[in-house]
Image (tube, rainbow, N blue to C red; front, side, top):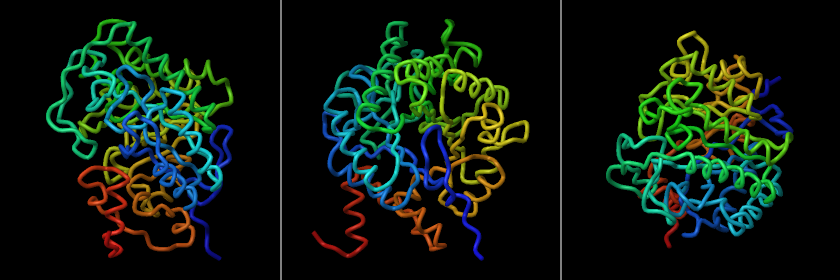
Length: 375
């Protein structure tokens, strides 16, 4: 008798019943219309993951307001009724294929490399981001120095997240995920070298996590106690693969506790490298995801290398997480959960799928070329 892979077992995430423990990780595809409206091509893309058996679909980050939140040109938004109407079609397609769908809410802050509403950027402090813009998402050259956000700017950002969550709920989404990871606005407030403020949002970690907790609380106040509100976290960033929370396990406990007390339903945590168990380990010997579970009692999603069946099984069996999310492995294998359940081989991810930009159209060209189909 063959024992089922632990990720193939059903799970519960807040009020959501999941057929299995595989989630599609959020991946920016810069394939929306210029005004941020999701397209029919995007509906096909997300529906394919549900048809492929993923227990949960988490969308790419959608920008939340028409001020400073947009991160790249052709990024989808959830900042208007037109945006919401198109997302409703996507939610319907995913539901029809049998999976729940969670919309990720994103404010780029200082890491904005394309905003149709503004030419300037804003962040916690007037500190230029490290590194350069990302070509795969249409950027090139150094990041500009952001304007330090005022309290009014902060209030606008929080309101944008809350309004976007209501639009997502009303568009039929099963939940929202707050993007507090990878170097974007909320993570910029959490990070010591991008947040040099001397007010209640700067200094000790309890202050630096304040904005993220306020966003969770504002959304929870609008959507009520039962709607799923997740938070994605990471120590590293798209423009800095080295950074770690300076206080290690202490900082992690403060961050996790603040978000749980604010009303988060789950925590979604990205690891810091290919050797997941080692790179996710904190100074007290626990993994960052395991510590999140122990500290809060909330469901935790682990991300990073989880397309490897043996690693995903170890993470779940050893109590490091409750679910696993898959990114590039899902791009190569939209039916990954079914392949794992049937012990079938997985297709290797080919980075050329995202060249010269990470659009759905370029991925389609790659697939046709690989299949020998000429256009």
